[in-house]
Image (cartoon, rainbow, N blue to C red; front, side, top):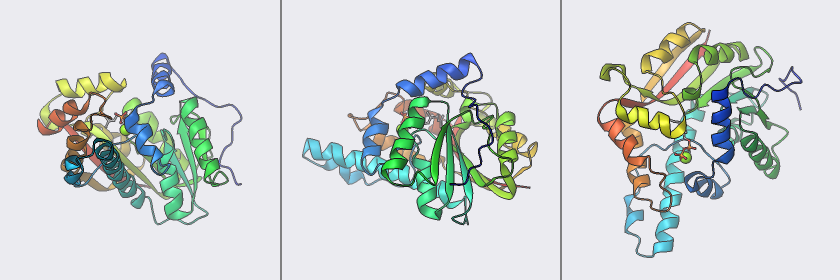
Length: 289
Ligand code: GPP
Ligand code: MG
């Protein structure tokens, strides 16, 4: 296969903080991620959007109820992945895309299945990179979809080699100026950058109690909405589409809250944060100029 990789030495983590984040993901086995992914071997680490089929809650048989709720949450997460992937294109099978903070790899597979493109996913978790590469091997797509134990701030990949790139709920682990500098370096002129993210709402003031609880839960540092546009403007990324997905993600959290077999304990915090106006679920699409 062609490669956009120019270095021999991987650059996994750069700080004690990043080591702790890697520890989290190396240990993570939440049923809400693993059980959903098993359905069709698309493993996501992001939330869902769209109206839910609430009839799954009325299912009388307990085992079937659990199965149907799991499938419905996966459908909503898949809808989020499809929305993001749809903004990456048009892309040709010869094009290359970069998945920054790829987790167990679902997003790169979604992009590859949609466009036939090459994909490079990057994660600081060795376990996630190995898992994702094994999934690609099982699908017989490892010639085009590859996962790397690397740092999204310093990938070592070739300058200008990418037609599109994204962060799906992974920007809150890094400094945005460093992140967007790397995306801008990797993207060719006219390339497309997409992110779906949770950000705190500048109009609320500062980070709310709920936003702080979410930070603590995942060991992350949620940025204010304004920080995205400032850092993009400083790094040749010009927004072309911004969509507030806050209302669209609430059904996912309402359903997840009632999934006793999948809850992690953070569900009410997300619902309160969205409803008190301190937190937003945002899609930003930008062109690399
Ligand atoms: C979901 O991952 C995303 C994050 C952990 C980053 C934080 C996102 C924000 C929008 C603040 P996951 O799917 O592994 O989480 P969970 O285990 O809760 O489903
Ligand atoms: Mg999840």
